[in-house]
Figure 1: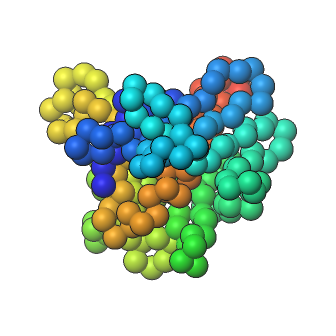
Figure 2 (figure 1 turned 45 degrees about the vertical axis):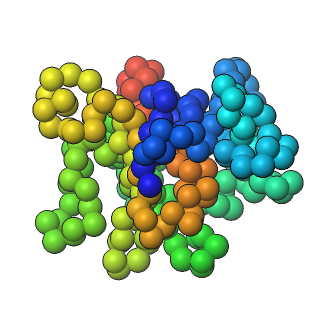
Length: 214
């Protein structure tokens, strides 16, 4: 399934499917401190739902963002500190502070989010057919095993003549989940919203003149 974002900001967008039908809504009000991201899913029966432009959404997850301590994912009345969800592995695009994230799903298998940079040129050994060779792919979710099976990938919207020529889907931002993993769609979306926020935060920190001059 390919989910297309109605904005270029994953934390503030409606996610629609290939048919143009809304599937999820993600909203993060602008606040200086204690921001919360609310993730809602399309509601079939309207139970405990809120409406937006005639579409009924039911609350799925809230993410409470914290700077000095672990952020918290709230789901079905339970609190899950993000350090309990993920462990950091490897080295990311910006070094050790930008490490990839591994989590265990309900099926008991491990999955790894590959954190890239906005302008990165993705590369991998030519024998790895599960890797998408594209400068437009940012995050990739893979099985954390020898197969490294690709589970999902995020592609941001790109502008400019070079991007238009090289990318057939460059006019929109999208999150693609491959068919054999669509049963995990809810969790993949929640983890993606969290991971993308972390990536952008790390990227801003690296680009900060204050940090770069240290």
